[in-house]
Structures are given as C-alpha cells and as structure tokens.
Amino acid sequence: MAFNVKKVRPLFTGVITTAVKYQEDSTLIGGVLIDVTKKEGTLNCYQTVVSVGSMVKDVQPGDIVCINFKRYLVPVHVPGQIENNKQTTSLQATYEIPQIMIDGKEHLFLQSNDIEYVVEEYDGVEGGGLLQ
Image (cartoon, rainbow, N blue to C red; front, side):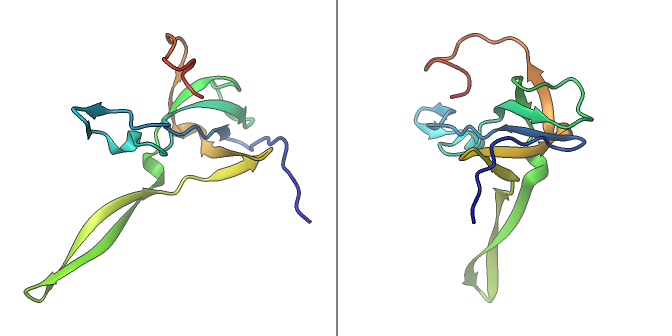
C-alpha cells in the first residue's frame, strides 16, 4: 500500500526546502556555459524554506535561502584510454543531495549549516519571480 506524504517536520537542525531547478543554462557568455553548476536541469542554489527543525535559528518557512551544496559533492574517477600501458582517468563531480517527496513534489532535505544566507530583499526577476 502506497501513501502520499502531505506535510513533514524535520528534527533538530533539519531543513526542508523546495527543489527548484534551472529551466535554462544561466551563465552563458558568447554562447559558452561558464558555470556548470547553473546548467539547465541542475538545482538552483536559491530555494524556499518549507519547514525547519526545532533547533534551527534565524530561518523560517517562507524564507528564500542560498544553499551551499559542497557537502554533497561526490568525486568520481572515470577511467579513460589506455596509452603506453598507462590508463588515464578523469575526475568528475556528482552531487548526492537528500530529497523527499511531499505531496507529489520533490523537496530537499538539508541541514541548517548548508544554508549560507537568507535573502531578505530582492528585485523582480524576469519571468515573474526568483524561484518558479
């Protein structure tokens, strides 16, 4: 029997945020992507807080926060070609960010120390808002 989680309250320093992704490549200069962390389909560093644990201070549901995803970076060595009896490898980065489905939508399950700052004021962004 499957069930649909409707509301979650994280414990201690847990923070639940939205999981908004970039809809298009965000940092193009002359048609070249200069920041691969802002590529279409990747998580936006700005998210809206949905719920916080009892020990979280200074962050409230509804706040827009900037998240540092570095803690979730997982380096992966990818084997390459064998040349002169030596195999080359390249180092690639993937991110393993805990997620939870709430009411059929993806959300991030983070810790309060993953939040760098709270956005207190901002101007409108083309397309109707900061996080859509």
